[in-house]
Image 1: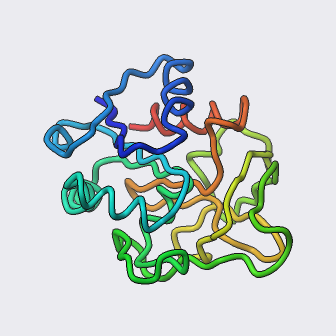
Image 2: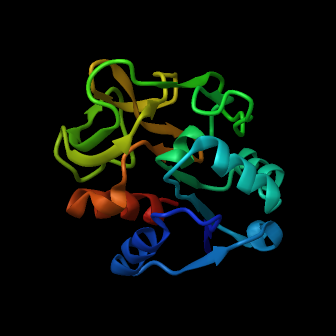
Length: 197
């Protein structure tokens, strides 16, 4: 079972549509009770870091979700779902992230904020998520905050500065862009995650 963490994220319907288009079955979870039965987990996200983390806390997701990720369950974070993997964010300094990766999410201080629109990915090492795609695929971004490059970064994007666009480390995958709004490239990225053993 592919579990989608349903905490009210605005892109939930389009994530569901993407999974349905590639023929993947899923279950929406509004609480952590069935998280232990999931063979893969997707955390979608749009909006505000603090609101997301508070809602995950209110629904009881924080510790069970972090435990499942650390236990090796394949995980895909989308947009805020990537940012949640870090310790904190300048968007809500008093709120804790999941702390899977060290570091803080920062606000863009260059260019027009938010970054909204298409940008290309630049792989920095081999990437399972980007298999069967052009060497520098275009995908759709909508965000005001970014993750720094870390050892787990597999692709970056440039918007006044370099930042992490794709994370891949063992069972953990995460993307700053919205694959559910990125056409054929986005479909392939989600399919690569779903099909990976």
